[in-house]
Length: 145
Image (cartoon, rainbow, N blue to C red; front, side, top):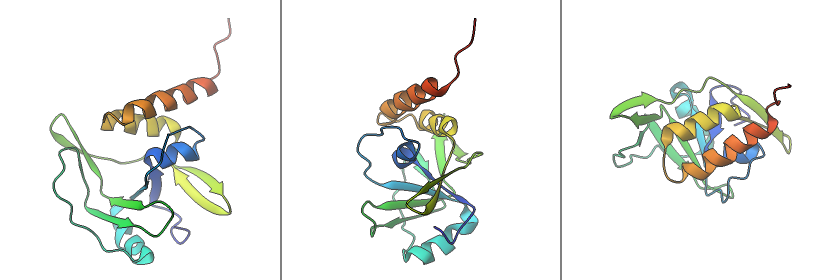
């Protein structure tokens, strides 16, 4: 992703790990890209967009899976989540840069990542919500008397 300085962020359990929060086993990396960037990212990775069966919770304008890294990378563009029967776009408003082994990675701020897990509301998100909330509480300054 070094070729793309804007328009993408890692979300999900991999983003938690990048924030230094225990996410348990990370089975894949969820990469959220802006729709205008999807074709270029797919070309760079050498992947073809996949047509997925309908899902009651998620849909995206474009989706691909890159299986070459140590863990698969799922690339989503134009991601939407169903909330009370209505499709809501997943649009991030924060972006935190994290440098690892000379690579520049981007994730949402932990508070926004926490809000995403709450929005998704899946059973597997419950421990993520607890872990992120605890990590946020640990770094919040305490009120002085």
